[in-house]
Length: 129
Image (cartoon, rainbow, N blue to C red; front, top):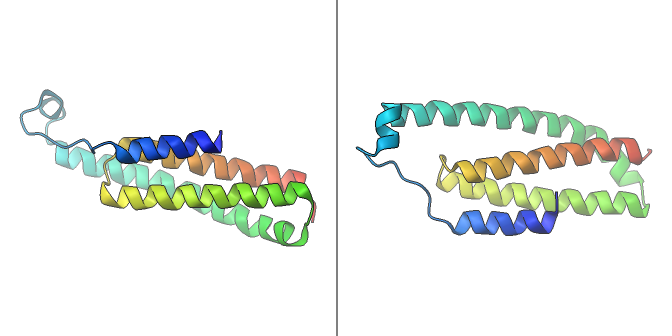
C-alpha cells in the first residue's frame, strides 16, 4: 500500500459528508429497522477491528526489542513506516468516533491495520535481534 495514496484517500473520505439514515428511503425500507441493523453491523466490525488490534499488539511486543536494538537502515525504515501507519490509524479512529457508521472510514482503517500487521510480520523476518 502506497502510504501517500492512503493519506490522500483518508483526506478525501474525511472531507465527504457522512451518509445519513433517511426514513422512507428505499434502502432503509428494504433493511427494515435500519437502526438496529446498523448497530449490529457496527458491533461486528468493531469486533473484527479488536482482533486486528490484539494481533498487532502481540506482534508489536515481539518486534519492539528488534526495533530498539537495530540501527540498520532497514530497521529505521520499518520504524518510520510504523510511525506513519500509527498516525493514519489515530486519524481514522478520530474520524470514526464522529460517525460510527461510515463504512468508507472503517474499510480504510481495516486496510491500515492489515498493512501494519504485514509490516510487523516483515520486520520480524527481516530484522534480527
